[in-house]
Length: 282
Image (cartoon, rainbow, N blue to C red):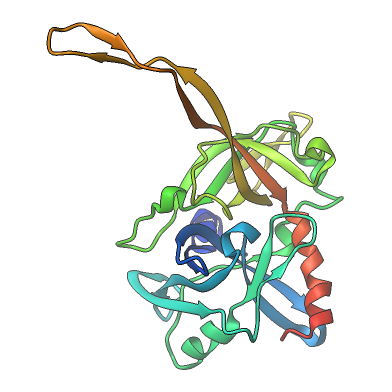
């Protein structure tokens, strides 16, 4: 995702793709995926599609679309190539043992298209954007964040672009929420947002954890949203009859998202590198 200043915000959009998943129960679900890359032994790279385990559970097929690109790598918006992954038993998602994350190698699908002369517009997130011991202390207890994904499956389908939403960290990122490698965000959460990457993205300047003004850009990949929290309440429903009189119906129990999102910390992705080496993925 290295880029000139005016390309940073565009690049975080092109790192995501809408996932359409068909499962063994004959159901179709929508979610968000994004591309992540590791440096591997012998200077090799591996390109991964990342999402939540619950999105890929019992999957039979998975579709996603990528825009084509011109000779300069700029997107040809809406001129997209559709890819289909099929669960044929030869390769499956690697699931994280502790958190709701899984990965799948996609270069075998995308590489032949690119090598055949069709440029694709996609960006990959890499380890350098994950907060580490050096830069985590510049993260304040409350930060503005960006969430990139497909809430309710929504997208600009004409141009094959995701929806970007703003929010804040609802818990201190530096403290593991409830002792788990998680944090909460305050943002509008819907089905389809699962798998959305969460970023701090400051262009030009930012305030560090001490409140000091710092010049420059700050782009940090904080984590992956995996669920929203429901709140329930009882309400009385009144119906008006033809005479204008209102009649009370039995109480109705309603549920709604309270706009708190649970997110897995991005550092959990680092576990996959050694597991990929152990499994012999290429």
